[in-house]
Length: 285
Image (cartoon, rainbow, N blue to C red; front, side, top):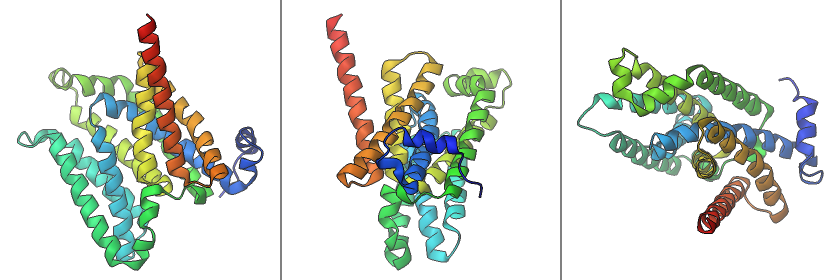
């Protein structure tokens, strides 16, 4: 695996020569930035489509894949990836079942994945040792391989959304009109869910369910509070991650806290700060 470019290492060192002097903390920074950014970017669409619970359902499906892989001796990463994409495919086809709402299928997938994951972890000592990791993540143990994987996924998602941005927006908010115009809405739905499933499965393995779901939700909430134009909302959501991940890792290092939850707390503090500033601005008008 090729070494990370020196320019990235210098970028990490800018935040704190003390905190990011160690290479494993720099790798944690890169992994957190990549995983958080791709989740934050997709999170804007997740919130605007009103499928927020989908994020935690797919994260739980990825966790089930990890537990299943450890239980039967499969590659945990491949199992998480396959099961998450399979679950995403189910959601993309949910519009065909008129008797069942998408929310009900998401809820079903979440409770089944959570229940089976707990059973598999309880019955397998190797999986039980990884139970907490699935929730809070192992960001500090990120490898170069995981960083390159996340970078490739981020590139694929970005290029896909740049190419199909207008179609995703059209299909998301006016599916009936898009279908009447002859667009293959199911194909665009499948592409969206595939990007989401791929991103979540890799990010969850590196950073854990808590970090992934928070990155899908809170940066987009902050950006939607501040901006109205779509490109600004997407950019703002990613910028929240670029600010929060280094701050969260620094907080984790200095206060001896779990890294993923520390980053989530920074997200939460930024949201409260932005909400308070917005409220004060509204009262002053």
